[in-house]
Length: 402
Length: 72
Image (cartoon, rainbow over all chains, first blue to last red; front, side, top):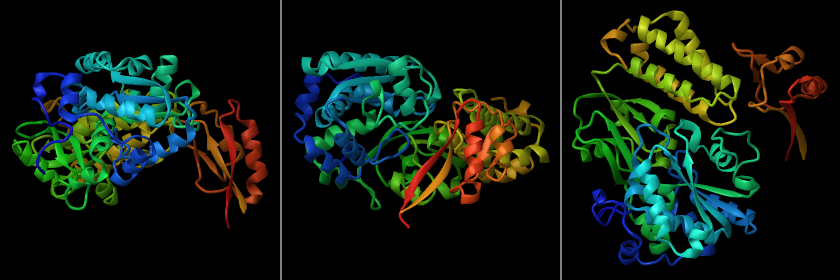
């Protein structure tokens, strides 16, 4: 690849690119309407918020549901603790994101746009707010900002709708799904900021251009956050299909030997390092292998750290982040976290191991949102990747505090 | 076309009263915290009246029957 796409242009540390510079560098989007929707379908672009749903299909459904009342929600909540790619995009290329949002508004005949940014991402919030002031009146008039509370589930689509409508960022029962009845009961397009930025470029250069990047049969580029035991952790724009080993090399290589990789953030999967190494970073290719790209976080677990203790720490976090609305999630995740922490603190015991295995299956699919599903998938992957460690874990909490 | 009935549950409404599992143990059991676990798949004809009764007994109206049409 010649280089970067979303992150091309001025130095990323130089702050948000202004509207005049943005237009001078990239010009205005040329594709719109049905032609844009069909280009998105052909591009194969998938959502970058975590669910990897094909963007073109989402737009097609919204286009037929909208009768001029649709709402576009620009999702920059980025509640995933280790992810930084959405805020990096917002603080450096806010107009790419807004281009995507207003293309959606025009194409889907939307009545309003809501820019939903995590309240803790102050710089990103300010950058988006300032970028919005630089846009033309017709765009500003239909747009408002909304702060996503600092909660893990705040970026979930029904929670975002709930916050925007009622000020409470807890998920609601679906159906109705937000794409049918979302903000103010109107059909609502919820799209991650990175996805919108890709759309802004596809609307300029077309789907063939989008597909011209990519390796091993994958299409396009993506933003990933490389975290943990690498020399230079941070956000990268890579060609889809780049392997984890290649992405790690782009971060200066491992800072110490790795035993495992946590792929896809806290709703993701632990994988043994040897198995993860050659996996191509592409939503479709990973799904074929039974794992997910999620929000694009790749955490390298140093061999010197204990996988059981880190799993216990993350389970505690996920249990605390339950919005406490559904019994199986509220009680189930807390019980899983307690059992996992007992193993971490006091050593392996047979009863807790049996409970962990049973609950990690039983809780699945029994919440209004996917929070419990993500958490138990994470737990199951830990039980399999760290099977030996879980089977004979010593009481070594004190040697390695969280 | 064949119509199939499935049990659905509003997980936010459900408070774990457990009447459904009392009335329909063939399809519903309770987890360790008293919340229902529903068997996958459509409800068989003989169980339909019992399923209806379980739905009617739910004190918070969390349980429902959803009918789906499936081409045979």
